[in-house]
Image (cartoon, rainbow, N blue to C red; front, side, top):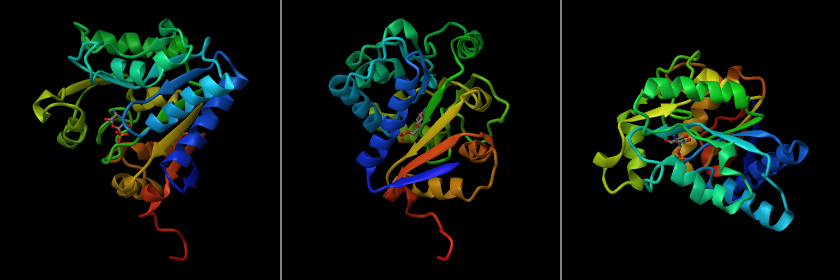
Length: 246
Ligand code: GLP
C-alpha cells in the first residue's frame, strides 16, 4: 500500500483527481469504481473542473458504484443514484447508460445482488476503484465481520453507520436499515484501488489501518492483501499514525 499524505482536503482531492484523470486519459473506455459519502466530494468537484476546463472526457467511460440503500427510490434525495447524479454525472459528458448502481427498490434484493455481481464481471473489472472508509473501518457498506470472500450482498447497517449517515436525513429513523453492497471480493476484482480519508474523525481509522493488522473486525484492513492500493489522506486523518522514531 502506498501512502500519500497531503496538507489538506483540497490537496488530497486534487491528487486523487490527477490519478483518475490519468487513468481516463490513458484509456477512454476505463471502468471506474465509484464511492459515495462526503469524502469523494472534493475529488468529484475536481473531476468536473477537469472536464470543463481541460476537456477530460467521460464519453466512453463506464462507472460501477459500490452500494445503494434498500428501500430508497432512485429519485429519493438521499439515494446514491441521486448523489451520483447531483455530484458528478450531470456535470460531465458521461452516458447514464454507462453508469451502474445497485437498485435499492428491487423486489428481490438477493437477485439484485447476483445481477450486480454479474455487472462487475461483465462490464468490469474496475480499472480504478475509489473507496472511502467508515469510522469503523467499513468499505462500501462492508461492516465489521464481513467475510473477505464476500461478493455483492445485502447488509444490515450497524448503528454507528446509520447514526453517522443520519446527518443527511431528517432523523435517524429515516436512515435505511439495509443496503446492497459490493463485497470485499467484488472490490478486490479492481485492478487499482484509491482509498481516501480526510479529517480528524477518520484519524483513528487511518491509524488502525496503518497498524497493518488484518482482521474482519476492520474490513479496510483486507486491503493490505490487494496488490495495488494507494491511500490518500490529509494531515488531520494521518494525525494519529505512529511513525518510526516517535
Ligand atoms: C458510507 C458509504 C461508504 C463511505 C463511508 C464514509 O456509509 N457507504 O462508501 O466510504 O460511509 O463516508 P464519508 O465519506 O461520508 O465519511
